[in-house]
Image (cartoon, rainbow, N blue to C red; front, side, top):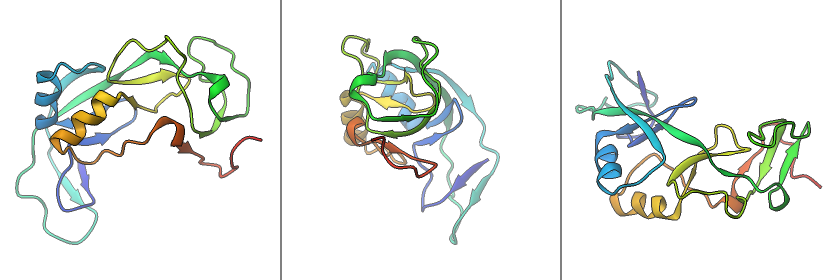
Length: 163
């Protein structure tokens, strides 16, 4: 089931660990040789639930289930602003105790060129290359908000930035 909040269904829907992309997005991603999403398994949308008043869409595009690559880059702890509740216990995955993010940077030399990925140290946070941002703008893909890494904020507990 897809939930519709606006007037039209978008090209991207984020899930837990996986995401849905429209057929239009999938075709363009492959045609332009972008990297970092795996799978592209077709899914059947059986129902669209509208969250606001208005008609349901008359046409539901095809969608594919994709999974972003994990670990093609690592967060640079020294140049990032994280609020942590526990120290990092695994230098490879770096997933311990992140309570808030107030901008981050990637370690020099750790990125392999993937266009979409989840970096080590940011479980569940997808990062995209400038090439991907240009791709999205050029094709007018919808339901994606791209934020520069140094401006990215995640503060579910509202504790504010680290001192």
